[in-house]
Image (cartoon, rainbow, N blue to C red):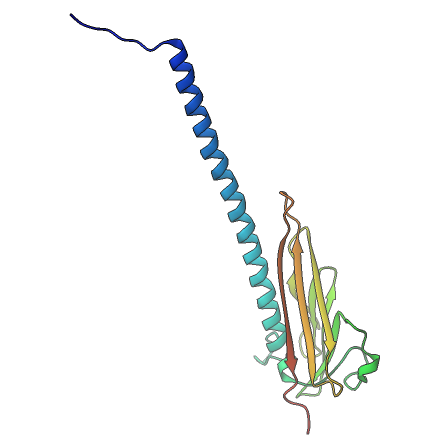
Length: 185
């Protein structure tokens, strides 16, 4: 005798419901992890960008002739013209530009303009060059401040905050002190 068994409609509905719940749970976890991964990538990219920008400000962009003039090679610096001997009390607490003189006695400038960092040098053509542009939907902060009375040390702060569609902002920031090593003694 052959016994035939079939599933009841209730059993099929319960099994279908369990499968749908399991599938949506797995899909929801996947979407959440994908969002977290994209946020992490955006944060890492911004952090990389600000680290590279800081390195460029410290070392300087490559100019004609292959020379690099940055804060590391500065002989003196100031918050405003006339450079380079602006006394420390005249420095604003936080300045978004810095004037510095290098070993070739030319005044160079790093400054913030419309969410971009610009490098100005009299030895390059054109004189102004954008060295970094912040991504869309972001805010760039660049701050310089003298932290020693003799202006031998400047504090550099860079921050980029980018608004993302999911509402969680991506951020990258760095702060360091640069010691002027080439000042006349």
